[in-house]
Every structure is written in C-alpha cells, then in structure tokens.
Picture 1 (cartoon, rainbow, N blue to C red):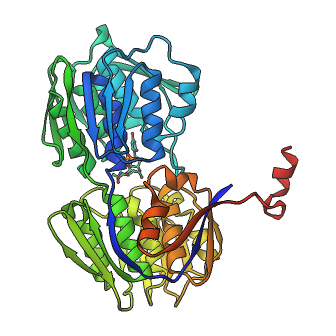
Picture 2: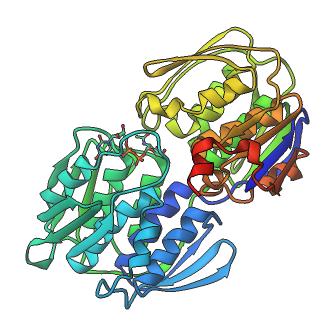
Picture 3: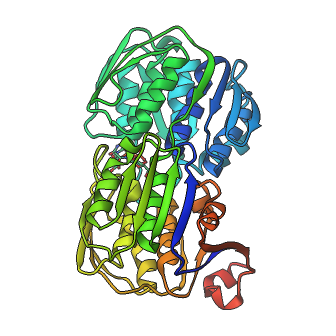
Length: 439
Ligand code: UD1
C-alpha cells in the first residue's frame, strides 16, 4: 500500500508553480462533449480526477490526444451514447463531477445517463437543485438504481428561468452546460460565484456560447445551435495554492507561489495575515512568509467570495499549533466534513467538534503518527500537519490526495520538505479482524 512518509520540522523555502484548477477542469472536460470540433485545453492539472474524465470521454467516442503533461486535444465530433460500456460506470462512480455528464449529454443528445456522483465522502450529496434546473429546461429526470437518466422533450432543451433554493456550485455548472445549446434564453438566479464558474463561462464562450453574468449571482445564457472548437487555458488552482500557503504557515519559511491569481486567494490571504503570516502579492504570484509565532483566529466557510470549504481542513491543521483558542465552522457541508479531526488528535491536537464547529486549543508542537487521508482536502491537512510535526508521520489512503494534487511529493520536496511516497506492504498487525476474515 502506498503511503506518504514525512519527517517533519523542515521549514519550506523556494518556489512552487501552481497547476491548473481541478474544479475548473472537472467541469470543462465534460462540457467539451458539447463541442463539435477540436478543443484544445491548456493548463490542465495532471491529477487522477482529470484522467478519469478523459477516459470517460474516450469511452463515449472522443479522440483524446495528450500534447504534453498539461495540454490535451479533445475531438468530440463523433461522441455518442449508443453503446456506453459497462466499465464506464466504474469510472463515473469514482468522481463527483460525473453529474456534469448529464448536463452535457442532454445539451448534445437530448438524453443523458450517468451514475450518482461519487468523490469525497463528507455527507449526502443531494442533487435536487440539479434536477430542479434540468426540469425547468424541459427535461424529465429519473433517479433509480444508482443511475440518473434524463431526456429532453422532443429531443432538445428549452431555455427558461431557474432560481436555486440554495447556492450550489454543482447545480450552477450543470445548468450552465445544459443551457448553452438550449433553444432560447435561460436566466439562472441565486447561483454560485466561484472562480471555476467564471472559468467555465469563459470556456463555453470561447467555443461559441453566449453566457453572461458569471461571477455575479445571476447568469444569463442565450442558447446557440452548437459549440465549435477552439483553444482554452484553464485558471490556476485556488485551493492548491491555498494548500501551499497553509503549509508555509504551519512549517514556517518563505515560498513564492507562481501561476496564481492573487484575487482568488484574497479570503485565504486575509485569514493567514490574521494568523501572523506575511503575504506579498504580485500580478501572478504571491510570496508567503512565516517566521514568528502563529496567532489563533476563527474561520467560517461560505460560498465564494467567502472562505472556501475546500480550505477548511488545511487551515484547521495550521491552527492546531496557534496558541490560544480557535473556532472553525463548516457552513457549506454538514459536520461529517470534520471526520479527519480524529486523525489530527492522534498527532496531539486538542480539538473538539460540536455540531458544525471545531473548537481548537493550540499546542506547542504536533507529533508524528500513522494517520489516514479521510478525503482529498483532509489528506492535504494531514500532509500540512506532518510537515509541521516533530518526528515521522505516515499517511495512508493517499489515493484521495492524488485525485486533486499534481505531483504533491515532488513539489514539497523541491521546497525542502522531507516527504516520500513509499510502497509498504500492509503489516499484519495493521489489519483489523474483519479484514482477516474477509479472506
Ligand atoms: C462544494 C463547494 C465547492 C467545493 C466542492 C468540493 C460551495 C458553495 N461549494 O461544491 O466550492 O469545491 O464542494 O468540496 O462552497 N446541495 C443541495 N442540493 C443540490 C446540490 C447541493 O442541497 O442539488 C447542497 C449540498 O449538500 C451542500 C451545498 O448545497 O451543502 C453546496 O453544494 P455544492 O456547491 O453543489 O457542492 P459542490 O458542487 O460539490
């Protein structure tokens, strides 16, 4: 079983280049199904979630050509839904973004089929707002047996007003994709405003769509007949950047992050400044420095431009060593996004979770331990805790981390961290009795 092994205590120094945004990539790749022609995507992150989506598209008949590690050409001219292989569903079940296939297939074929979303397990993943939006556009949606199936009346969606009851990134993206080639105008209200929503709108527009207002709370989409090919460069990853910033805060040192959009990092930068971390912003880089003691603070997650839920575990890991009392409140997902707290406690953190909040009492140092990545961002939090801790930390279940971080080990090693990925056989003592019984 592959693990990360970290000898903590090294401050981080040097420069790290941030990759393309995972959350933009997992929306834009499915959206490319709507494009009749060659669509070249640049600054694509080399992570397992994008690999999975590219495989799914190739099962649908897309021609996928990797030009280099971060550039792909997708030709979806001949995609079809005629004989989707059974093994495609093994892939769609692995990732959350498979629900974007529904919007894209409906837009392209007037009918759609995918599995219920997979991905990180931090609570129920309701899709009622996706269904509400697709139904408003004239689709009939059926959810049964773990599958979502949808079809458009007379084979084509019709633009319509949609108002979400709740701000949802997923539902906003799905309806934007579906409406891009619907007949007439769609106006979506109470939408999410995350940077990757704007990136998807820019992608769709550069392929011939007419999407306006992305980044505000209302998006207008005038449907076009079809999308054409083109070249698009994805935005840098706000959360990957935030993770390296948090790592410098926890381990100390001074790091320049290149290929970032500082504006997207404002809420993270401002929290880190409260915690006594220095941040210098350039046009497309930030320099993060921490040489004094951390200060405690409170954090509450919110939809963008609020503090991102995807940075909640990493910041909790940093606050473990900030003297005094900090409170971290998760207001986007329910309390199960705190499952990783038990792992931080193994490292000596003083944290109690009550309802939607984690209450922390800062300790002097964390101590290395054997911990697991409970999900993608929780795994990143374990890396951060391990880098700052005394002694050796072993992180298991790293497949979660590799879903969303390109070359995490290489990038941290280049900053002076002592982190390795090792393939250690599972020790018998580690096996639980039920594992042994499972034969
Ligand atoms: C959310 C985050 C996103 C992050 C992603 C992965 C927000 C607003 N969204 O996006 O930044 O990258 O997790 O960690 O911060 N919901 C419904 N019905 C629906 C859809 C969603 O009730 O049909 C609820 C969810 O249960 C959740 C909230 O709305 O409580 C936000 O969900 P949504 O934004 O759709 O989730 P993701 O797209 O996964």
